[in-house]
Image 1 (cartoon, one colour):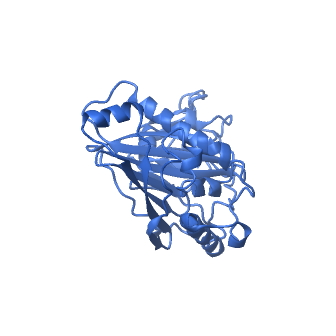
Image 2: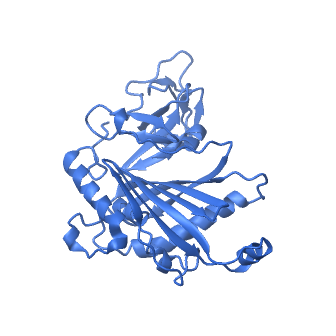
Image 3: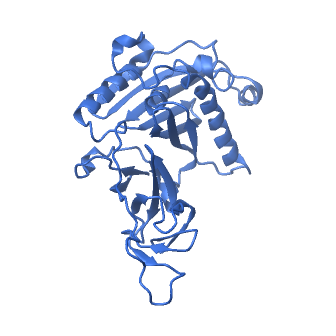
Amino acid sequence: MASSFALQKGPVAVPFAGHDLVLFPDAAGRPRLFSDRCPHRGASLALGRVEDGCLRCPFHGWKFAADGTCLEAPAEPAGASPPARSDLVGERPVVESRGFVWMWWGPDPPDPALLPELPLFPAADWSHVESSFDWETHFSRVIESNLDNSHAYWVHKGTFASQDSPLSIPVDLRKEDRMIAATVSFELPVKGALKLLRSVMGQSGPLCATTTFSFYYPNLNIVDTRIGDQLRFVFFNASLPQSDSHTLARWVKYSKRKRLRLPGSEAQSIAISRTIFQEDHGVVRSQRPTPVPLDLTQERHVASDILSIEYRRMHRRWLSAEPLATMARPEPLGS
């Protein structure tokens, strides 16, 4: 639901399935998650600040301990106790693991065995940027769009793909209970400054790339692209459902650390990624039905759809196995 980088900056607003939550680190750096409303006047605590592992409201300065206990109501006389029912509510189990913060949404005790073994990208070797994108569609459509390679030749032809390149069928399909992955190879268009640079370096011919698409249930996509021998970009994209027609995607993009980073390079990297998402968004939000059909007979499929097919099978299986723990059926947080 958020990256470890975001947690370190805290507090973080976490809208999820109609609920407003706030994430912040305690004094030991461990994540804590509560309803994002101050019990005093309902202000967003995500607009506040973290003080020694406690959360300070931005409106009247009420201070809350990591367990939600109200410690201070500054407008009260010295020595006065906070009024009754002043503690934070709606605490959810949450844990940080391998670069991300994970929330448990089911009625049963959290199961650490379900946390995926994600690849790590040490800061000494990798730089990163992160941002978010609002999709006007169901989270399953966002997930599936990040598993689909063949649309790139049509949707992203002005950004990084070319219709002159041959289409590629995903190969090396890997499947586990809560993970699927496959790899595609393709050619990138070479023009402009890139063409000049390759000419200066004595390189010619097609520029080949490979992308591995991975998905970890219930909501994390990884798109790992290698371009030639020099470049590698790794996208982590977490889809947070807001409603049947709204998804908040929070993403982190890793790239090999360079000795010199030009001013504005991070902003440019975010802008390029946003342009790619916007290209996708115009088409993906038009898809109907809004959630992906779990009955495979409702749409036609071809060989390049293998990851989409496997995602639908996985989603259908876990919806049946965990009906109360899925993102599609949020439960109340209490009051």
